[in-house]
Length: 470
Image 1 (cartoon, rainbow, N blue to C red):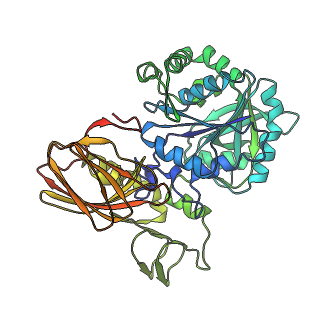
Image 2 (image 1 turned 90 degrees about the vertical axis):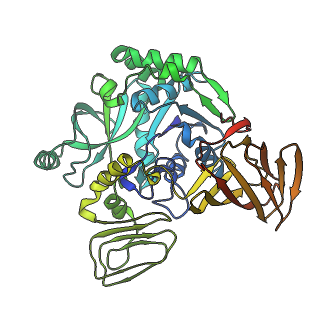
């Protein structure tokens, strides 16, 4: 069995914490230390798995995904880079084709990277119990036992029972209105569609060729023309773009005669909103889920998250209050789905807060935009041990670098110099430059003061980059 983790989402309904360049699956939202991606991979330990993992992710997230896999020693992993999101059917096709390169009998356990499962042991028993169906050629979807009439999920209607605890699939249902969701719940014949699947890679691709041959063809061509880039597999963008945008449910599961639904009652949540995150979070005696530096008085049933400042709440109930370094959101918990309306406004206004936090992560470390004004910007930059920035130049800005911790090796024009703590250098407009942390054990920190007529991140001409960025 090979775990396949789909990590291409954005999680915009968890704004302002989840953003385009740092989405919810890469954040420790449901655990004090582990990201949701890391939790997803770790819950496969103990399964009849081969020890390798395939992660399909957005190209923009590749270095963060790679770093998080290293943190949990998931080094025997393949990271497939999607040039663009085409939904789950093509993403899973890429993973299935890749798995068959090394194992013609590969069984894939497909999981979104941003789900919470409270009872991991029970989840593993359900997966192992479904293996016999997969070995017989079935395509298994895991149906979550519904707890309430949820209108935000699709549903699966079960058919006749099978030996081993599974059921034939009678029908897939779209997200229903409340009255229909209540009818589904009352009947006891419907499950929430979890988006978790188990099948032989070859079986999935056989059904894909039958029902959606254009997806199979595009993904086969994209993988045939792929290239290894550091620790990543970069599939061909032009070929992949020819695939239709479609989910596995529409492309295959609703059409195949080989679908089986396996009930799953494991404390599952897709953490699709702030209210859903509140549901799965630990709470105090007043029903408050509290994270960070928070003081409360006469406050009940609220989710309060402080990332950089003290947040206080007095005499409120059923609120979500979220503070980040560049945004504050207050919303009634019952209106949690309406966060998407703010996200739409951010997109229309082309606000940076839609995509980035103030602290922006790069493959070499991170930078924090401390201050900015007319024709200047100040950044705090941390370079990981042994890491280096690209050899580059800027057309519109000059830079002053001051080392505040560590030792830097700086290329400044045709000279290479070493800067220690409290030493600095000036880089004129148009000057070729680079920065390297000379230590392999400690981080390097510098303060960078930019000045010039244009200070955008796209004013970078790279001449050489160890991370393969253009």
